[in-house]
Amino acid sequence: MKIRFYRKEDEKGWVRCRVLSFLDTAYFDNVLKEKERYENPSIELVAVEEGQIVGLLDIEYEVEERTVCTKGAGFGGMIWHIAVHPDFRRQGIATQLLKEAEVIAKIKGLSRLEAWTRDDDWVNKWYVKNGFKNVDSYLQVFMDSDELVGTMKSNLTHFQPIHAFAHYLGDETEKIKKQFKRTHECVCFEKMLNN
Image (cartoon, rainbow, N blue to C red):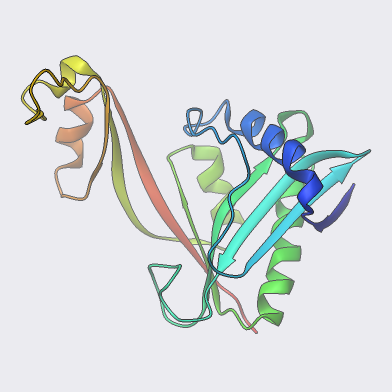
């Protein structure tokens, strides 16, 4: 297995790896049809095994503080994507991608990394195991038509919302979790990089 920088011709394999990696997670419905492009500089790595993309890591980083990251001080990098193909999990690929990205991030002058993820216990444990600390969270709430009654309505005639997605930033998280069938705690992890 080789870790290298992402190349434009990797896009199809990158998308396939990401889609398959997310299917059995809380992000199962976060499907991309093409690779994201970033406004700011980025560190984009892939893990390749026999010509197949089996892991990926994208970090968009700041050249001006607090333009990409939301927490802490100093230049930060946001981990937008980290994924390992399900057939290649538990081989340390994500950790190897992270370690390589950290080396590059330090060279670029970053002092910290941030990552937001949903409430998959195994994912959250991986971040903690790799030196990240939980620094914030909020709820992501998915609503179907029956749950929208009394919660949301349209001012447009003949326009009826069927599904909705919302962020809940308040203190009554248990009440919200009981009211809606699908809620996820979205957790912010931060790791300080010792330069």
